[in-house]
Image (cartoon, rainbow, N blue to C red; front, top):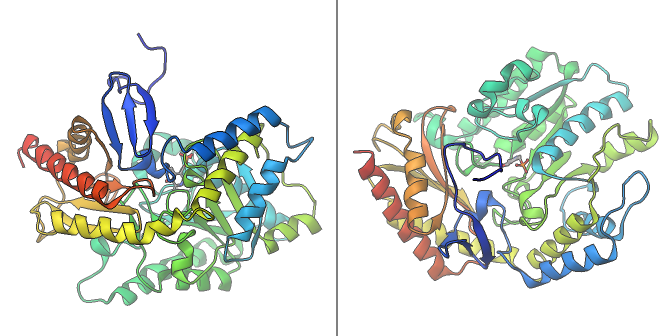
Length: 444
Ligand SMILES: Cc1ncc(COP(=O)(O)O)c(C=O)c1O
């Protein structure tokens, strides 16, 4: 009998016992290909000797030191590395324990920034439907994942939501991609004007939407217009790259492909690739200087902030990505993954879209390709795909509610960057079998 409080009391997941490369082995000896990196976490693969060594050495040298007494060499070196490799004027790094904590910190940092510069009315945050920024109350409120928000709605601050930039679902047939992008970006300006321009503090968005809508990049021009609108109204742009950052989309940072830079950049998952829990807010010089010239102290903090062992793990992972070249593998391998998905599913009756960037790809499942009608949510097609994939030794990340939090199903793929082309072909082959078996079991 387990004493762990699990995600789902009616399910007993297998016990993960051992992991190496792109596979996880359970306590019964069954092997699973980690084709989703868990939830797009594992980037350098499992059991990386350099990362394991860095963690052991750091734990032996300095296990822990509270940030109200000390900084650490590990946190300093990680921050230096991140700042050196970001092509934007983001030159301070606030280290926390997860993606949710990083978004919480960014929300509070933004609020306090406006107090520091004498704009105390700025308290409204705006974000997008079909986005996710974490499960703690502030980050949950700041997201647009209605399924996850619903039970907690009475506890959440009010965050106006604008449309996502999700062309497959919401672009009109009579408009170009560019026109669509500008139309939905302009919803931000309308929301700012409605809230009162002097009241709005920040706009949060995932640069490439991750699990909620299934690997959705914006159309060209969308983020440039968003940046213009933020600048025009003095609103901070907070880009959440918890899932799409750290090389996942083919550049170290997803925003590099949009021709803009955020005021605050949120990192987690691929920062330490799952070896330790860690998240980060990278803040612009302007934001940091407001604190330095003002009260001096950010009214925030956690016991495990800037944890030395987590920082050392993250630094070792970043060395694997940048200096050892693993991040540079993503663009060509991502192209191979996408073409393998198109080849397998491009003519599939029940796959409406294959999309994504780099090694963050998804297929969207539909009842009818022509009308793009989704399956009845009661069928729980995404859960069936997950079950069938696991039965075949394949970990993928299927999710429902792709369109509006209720309707739609997609399957996300996010393999570690060490994956090889033949392994990608195996993954796509197994996924094809799992999807077909799930459809058969759903009587579709
Ligand atoms: C885009 C995005 N932001 C924030 C989070 C929350 O991160 P965490 O689960 O580490 O709290 C996630 C997690 O899936 C995410 O994908």
